[in-house]
Length: 228
Image 1 (cartoon, rainbow, N blue to C red):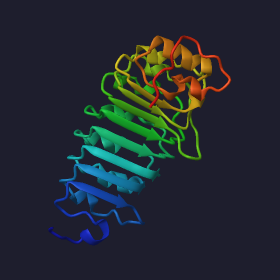
Image 2 (image 1 turned 45 degrees about the horizontal axis):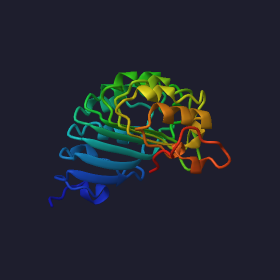
Image 3 (image 1 turned 135 degrees about the vertical axis):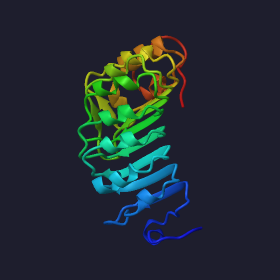
């Protein structure tokens, strides 16, 4: 493998298509020279690190791992080939709309986002996403106001683990006709909410449709639903 002045700190070769880098101080310097990278996994991403990453216009999959301290995602709009994006703990991000300009995006994961409560911004992704993750962390619940903006989304999988939804309303998922699997916390709805969704979408898999997960509650409507 060809070496250069950045190889020792980056541990990503100049011709690498897959790379992993955990930032320590300025150890990320030079990552913008790794133009062949298609898949990149990172952590401790500050703004300078993210700005260099956004020069890698061949990226197809990008994980910005815990914690993301960058303050703007605007540079991501340069990554025209990106189809998979994961943001873990973007504590300073208040504007997620630059994601909407990733026109090839099919998989989006946002975890433990301090300023993400209102999902109305996400509507333009309605017909693009195959999988959407809106999750919290082990110690922090992701608090969403409502999933009403997800009404009619074309996604096949929705993850809301360690997540709560203020209005407890799952009915927007009834119109997500491609949705096959719902992985979520119990806190996203009520017993009645899950059972109403189970009745409306018997084709949908969700562990909370199973009566064994609701001890002491009377289950309406015949046989147990599917479990994972």
